[in-house]
Image (cartoon, rainbow, N blue to C red; front, side):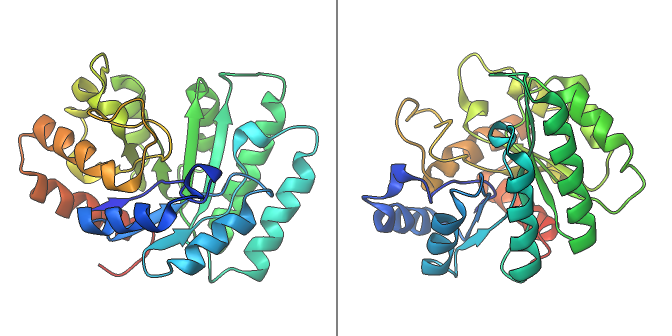
Length: 258
């Protein structure tokens, strides 16, 4: 299994990270991809990925909720990291737009998103897109990239069937599925049944969005097995079949050996 989106470098894991990593390996997780948040998280992100270099792979980007009046300085930091550590980063993320909490910086979020999409093309890296209450805005930005080699993942997808269909219009983009699919009131299983298995990848978004049966607790990469089992149920396949397909897809988008 591959966890395409996890924040194991956060303070939530400072006391027991070795145990968390051991449980992930025991569960069968072979790769954990870690998106950055902003300049304050780069050091801890790289430290964890260096300590667990065989399993953890860092991305660099500016999270939309960290876009504020100082966003240009933050973007310069991302650009500097890309230019000086290009060989270390496997993707650009977590980027996108989030209008759930605050709409003060809508324009700035759009500018930051486009700038980072351009860098993804320049460095031939996939993007990991965060989208919350902002699908129409992000889709509008992506329209101008329709005929480019841009590739990536729509992380933590919880949208409608129509939104999933619009993502699938971009042949190099995938849909990230996490513990939300296990929630009792989630409509994601119905939407997911209309998406080809080859277009999804699995993630945890640890420490957030913990799947059933551990909902309410801190999430961790080993819990991806519960998302896998639910996705297998939706597709009427064995967990092993789903694991093979989604893992191959994840490695392909990140340009890593199968």
